[in-house]
Amino acid sequence: MLYVKAFHIVFIASWFAGLFYLPRIFVNLAMESHQPSVERLLLMARKLYRFMTILMIPALVLGLWLWLGYGIGKGPGNGWMHAKLAIVVLLIGYHHACGSILKKFERGQNKRSHKWFRFFNEVPVLMMIAAVILVVVKPF
Image (cartoon, rainbow, N blue to C red; front, side):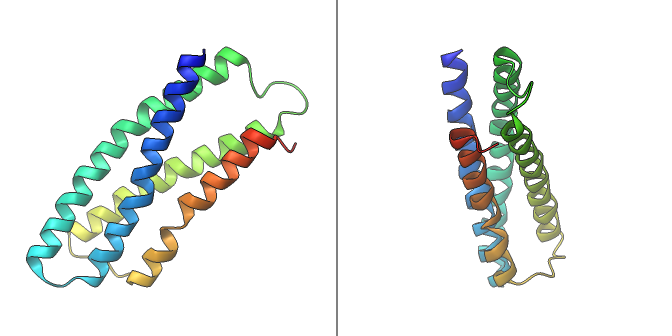
């Protein structure tokens, strides 16, 4: 199970790297009007989103394996696991929101400012902090 946990952490960290970087590309796309630069940024965003999705799948599968293998979340005093699972659901939603935003950029339909994307970029940071605290501290 330690190998499963180790690879889960590796895939989670890799997925988060994409969740941190893709919205930064969106910031640049929202600021850019020069067509060759926009095309380059869109290419980067498409490739990163595809790679992030590939990383997300084993991260979730390994997490499920750990959850089932350890029996975590059963019984009293495991509210932290339910809260962490809620964060995982929100992260999956954030991931798909990034895909939706990318499609809007590809169609030239983005209506949000670079400032909005700067705030949007902080969401996975806050979720990661919350998830790590829940897993390490197990406050409830």
